[in-house]
Length: 286
Image (cartoon, rainbow, N blue to C red; front, side):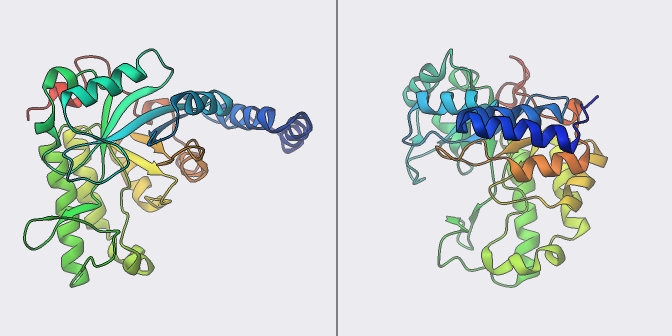
């Protein structure tokens, strides 16, 4: 059962921690957060990019939050600071993380990422994460919806196509975690609650359950909102927490933890990188 901490006790801990310095404050805060849940805290959406692994591991220890590293993986057509595109690059990345107190993952890019790697090397990963923010345009080409120039078209048709895109990704790719769920282009955000109808939310949740994909609660985008998460929890979905952080911003899980508290999430609700043989890249055909 979660520990009940009185306001006086909480403030006392914070006062002692602040007087002792920022490092102890971070540790004390993490300890207080951890005590509120019956599962260990993990941020499974962390990018190294060009930061050093030593700094990231030190921050993880300071916060008391285990990090899952997910560098981008796919063809070089995907433009990010780091894109792993073949067995050699993925092997070097995995060797670099081997023995470190982090989870080893990738953020898969586009629909052809699997063709870049052999199944044996992919099996060394602990999980695969992706999102739906890169989508096909009318010509079938990949377009990043957050970049200027993306054309939404008629809103309702876009939303139906966007939901179907989520389902297609889950149906055809060996995924463990779906990130940045319910994100919308900025021009649509004022209509978020109207556009994300119950029918659309349920279609994505059903697909996640069918294909065994966990749903990320994103502190970066403060999404999904509570209604989606309540529906997903009632359906039996698994969840992960993610910051989408680069150093030193990984581990900032305020929104994720707030939603976890509101939902009453417990250990059985949380995604944990699966054992060997149970990973999506091993159990799914591709």
